[in-house]
Length: 278
Image 1 (cartoon, rainbow, N blue to C red):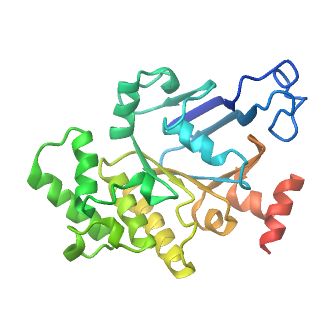
Image 2: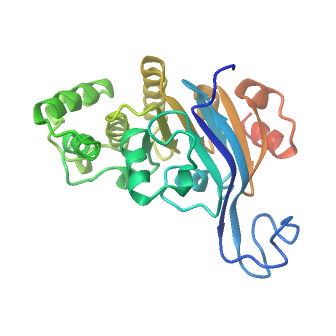
Image 3: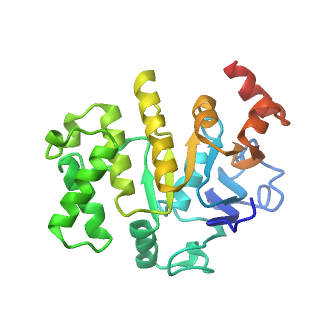
């Protein structure tokens, strides 16, 4: 790809705990990503990658590999310990996003980013109506025109295959797959150039998973949104991702075109992941 990245992440660090002389520096005192001496967990260690316009980047790894923590850091749900992220769009070009104020980070979440969580309870207000959830995001992005918001909400709910006669229903009455589709509609409401998807098919029936994945592919194709998809399921990554990053113990251990990584894995851990799927 010859285009400039829409998102650049460099040396992202996230640790839980103070660190000590035995685990700081080269991390040689760690057992996996945990320091037995001081109890510090290094959830993300020196993570660097680029996301290109219109690309789906997959991040795969076992539970505890750091992939969901990475996503939470990027979306400002958690503060980083160190590192930098830059976006090539909006008012904060060339600024380290992690150094921005809380208000500026809110602006990026409301205008530049969309997020679909594994657990819909984190992304939706279960007592609001489906269309009310979308309106909430639009209001946060500065929209005050009720008719416009209703029209946008209807269009998005149709796009994610939620029947419009259920638009005034609360998501708590919906199935898991429908809740995820409302979350996707809400995340797309501010037309974000970057969309984060964290384990969005986990816990769904296989047929429902397939519908959600088809929807994500269709949205990416129609809207050209750049996406980061986190999953422990290689079948999901194989279907969606153009490029893939493999994480283990908080660090990236392998990356490349998805076909290349899954067909010819170089690292022993990636080989184990791929062969366990076969």
